[in-house]
Image (cartoon, rainbow, N blue to C red; front, side, top):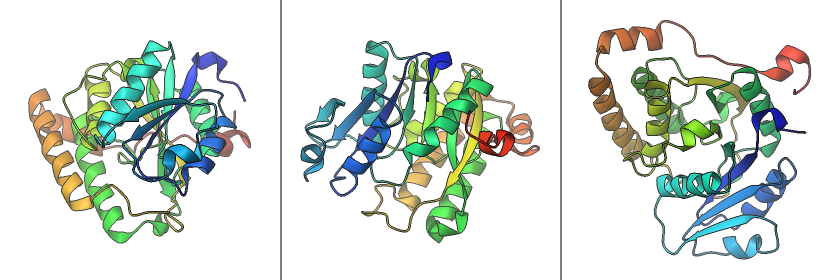
Length: 258
């Protein structure tokens, strides 16, 4: 598998107390791309020991700073090292690195777009509270973007360099991922395309760091502020909810990953 037409691409893995899953996640990532950046967000378990012998670029936080800061530091390092794009994936095993070639194929098909690994297969595996929270977030963040977006809460994403350069957006925690989506579309004119992936929750190794009520409330408040800021509120709503999101599956189209 090559990503030559996309330039240099690295895999970015934020991790906090992922000792049970992190080695498998990192090894699977290394099997797809040679460059893997792990941001350890102040883990207090054996996360670091599990990957100590693996050839990764490691960023270490002395204490937890949240997912937003982990992604922010990962973007900065990727930009410093001259990468043209990164694919972010969570360290808990929920995401499968085997989906990344399809995401890269989508990025080639849709230049100047973010690509989301959208958990729209086997959606029934998703806990009810999480599914409802994600539906609310999709409704609101799509409005914030002014275009329809499938699975705005997925952490498996392809970020082109232009999106990484939004690193200094004033948003923290899980809100940062929403802020990147909205600003990439509104400020940079980037598109968003979703690639279907499986919903993987059975076998999750730890309780999620995402708190549906708290985090969706924070994301909603941020998004409302952005909707108001960009204006043309009704027009934005119509654009974001009158058509389906862009979904591309290179396997379905070609019979194999590009």
